[in-house]
Amino acid sequence: MAPTLLATLRPPARPEVSQEGLTAHVSAREFSVFYRKVEAVKQVSFDIPSGLVTAIIGPSGCGKSTFLRAINRMNDLIPGCRARGELVFDAANVYSPEVDVVALRQRVGMVFQKPNPFPKTVFENVAYGPRLQGTRDRVRLASIVERSLVKAALWEEVKDRLSENALGLSGGQQQRLCIARALAVDPEILLMDEPTSALDPRSTTRIEDLIGELRGSYTIVIVTHNMQQAARISDLTAFFYEGVLVEYGPTQRLFTTPEKKQTEDYITGRFG
Image 1 (cartoon, one colour):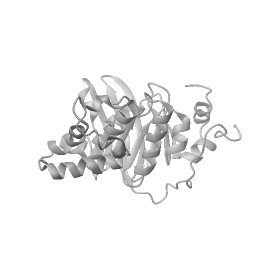
Image 2 (cartoon, rainbow, N blue to C red; image 1 turned 135 degrees about the vertical axis):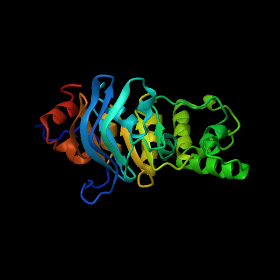
Image 3 (spheres, rainbow, N blue to C red; image 1 turned 60 degrees about the vertical axis):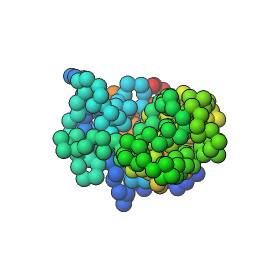
Image 4 (cartoon, rainbow, N blue to C red; image 1 turned 120 degrees about the horizontal axis):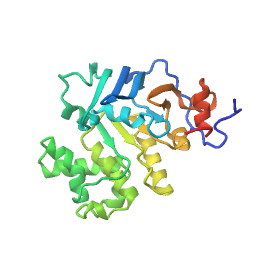
């Protein structure tokens, strides 16, 4: 085994997380996702702890994005997609017929790979979710918009541009706007699917710094191909391969002394 797999990675500056005593926010129990007859996620079982950043890594097509989208049932929009097993959130199986999917998605926000602001003003992008929830008071909406943009580290850059079309923002600003839009409905969990893959290095650093600032206030689950990014920003890491959860544990341990040879091979670039 390589003496230190993090030789080319910058390890997190915070202490290693112990999985003991953590409160699970989402729990997968023998959970599978099928695209018609193809099992894309294969009976995975692990807990995603509250208030921490969990990274999901693995090669393309390994099921990591499929699992991420399962948490707020975005896969329901794909014809022929179905789930089996349990994905527990708030003491209920997310896939139970009694679950209100609209309410679930308000509590579990999502940021996608490419920035996708609405062709509306900056203000209306952030106010969109609260309006859907019934907030009509302009003063209240303005307060929510400002608070959300502050949390997304974007307020100072756009406070004088709230009435401008959001499509005029830079790519990095658009992605932080999408994060603000997700935060505006006060979610408990924030899902991020390759949120920096379409951004330049400077914008990527801003998003990574933002994730660090949001840690503790939200449970964050991020899918990333970038090993350095996973090492820098996450507390725990799950390695998926061909739909199987190969290894899961504290990021520092998984990147320095992985238990599985397959994990070491992927992290050191021998495959993937």
